[in-house]
Amino acid sequence: MGSGRVQPRALRPGGRTTRVRAQVLQAAGDVLAEQGFTHLDLADVARRAGVGKTTVYRRWGTVAGLVADLLIDMAEQSLPRTETGILLDDLKANAQLVRRTLADARQGSLFKSIIAAAMCDARAASAMHGFYDTRIAEWVPCVQQAIERGEVPQGTDTHKVIRAVSAPLYYHLLVTGDSIDETMADQAAQAAVIAARAGVYMRPGHS
Amino acid sequence: MGSGRVQPRALRPGGRTTRVRAQVLQAAGDVLAEQGFTHLDLADVARRAGVGKTTVYRRWGTVAGLVADLLIDMAEQSLPRTETGILLDDLKANAQLVRRTLADARQGSLFKSIIAAAMCDARAASAMHGFYDTRIAEWVPCVQQAIERGEVPQGTDTHKVIRAVSAPLYYHLLVTGDSIDETMADQAAQAAVIAARAGVYMRPGHS
Image 1 (cartoon, one colour):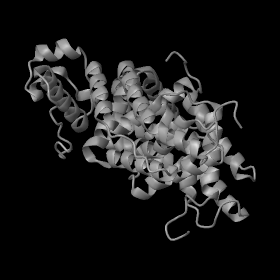
Image 2: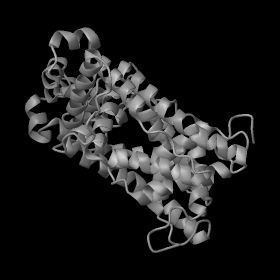
Image 3: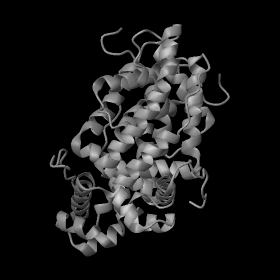
C-alpha cells in the first residue's frame, strides 16, 4: 500500500515476550494490509519481525491463529466510546471513528483482508466476530443512557442501534466501493437515531 | 456446500455458443459457491462444464474475466422490482429478496466469494460494482414514485434509500456473521423509509 506504518505500535512495558508479540503482530498487520490474507506466511512474518521462525510457529501455530491474536490485540488497543449526553452526537462520533478507520489506507486494507480471511477460515471468522462484539459492546452504553434519558423507547435493542451505524459504512467499503465520506458517516448516525426513536429496533416482546 | 444446484440455469434458446456460456458460468458459480475464488481455475471449470479447455481460455482469458461475465449474466437473470404503490411495502419486498438470496446456502456462498474476489482483483471489483449498480437502478423507481406521491421529500437521493435497505443485510453476512432473518429484513426497510421521510438522504443542495 506504500502508506507505511500509519499507527506505529507503541511498545508496552514488559519483557521479551511482550516485545516479540508486538513485533510479530505489527509484521502480520503489515502483510495483511499490503498483500492480503492469502500472502500471510508464518516464516515471512518471522523474518519481517526479526524473530526466530520456531518462536512464531510455537506461539501462533497457524496463520489463522496469528490473525486471531492480532484481532485480540486490536480490540485491546482500540479507542473508548465518546459520551456527550446526546445520542445523535455519540453516534456521530462512533460513525466518524469507523469512517476514519476504514478510509485510512493501511487500516482500510487491513480490515478488508481480515474480513476476507474470515470468509475462508472459521477460526479467523470466530476471532473477527469477537473483535466486533467487543467494539459494539464498548458503544452500547451510549444507547442505554439514551433509553434512561427517554431519548429512545424502553425495550430498544441497544446492540442493533450501534450496528445500524456501522452497517452502511462497511457496505460501502465491501460492496459498492464508494468512498466513505463525513456526510455518509453523519447520515448513518442520523438514520440510526431516527429509526431507534421511531421504535424500529425494539427487542422482541416490546412494542 | 453440499446444497447442489439450487437454481439450475435454464438453457436459453440459441446456438452452441449460448449453451457453452451457460454451462461454463454454471460451473464457475458452483466452484465459487463450494470452494471460493482462490480455487477458481479455468481448466477445472472447463472440465466440470464438459467444454474444451481452449474454448474457455480463448473466450474468458482469466478467472477475473470469468467472474466478470458471471456477474453480467447474474444481473441479466435477476428479478424485477416489486411495485405496490407504498414505499414501505416496496422496500420490504426488496429487503426480503436480498435476504432470501443471502440466506440461501449456494447463493450466500457465491456472493461472499464474489465479494472476496473483488477485494483482491480490480477487474472483479469493477464487474461487481456494475452488478450492484444494475440491481440498485432496478429498484430506484420505487423511491422516485414515492417522491411523486409525496411520501418522501423532493430532493431525496433515490440510490441512497435503496442502498440503505441492503446495507444491514450485507453487514451481517460479511462482518457480524449473524443470521439474516425476516425481522431484520423488515427493520432494514422500515429504517430506510423513516430516515428518508425525515430527510436524512437528501441530495446536496436540498434541505
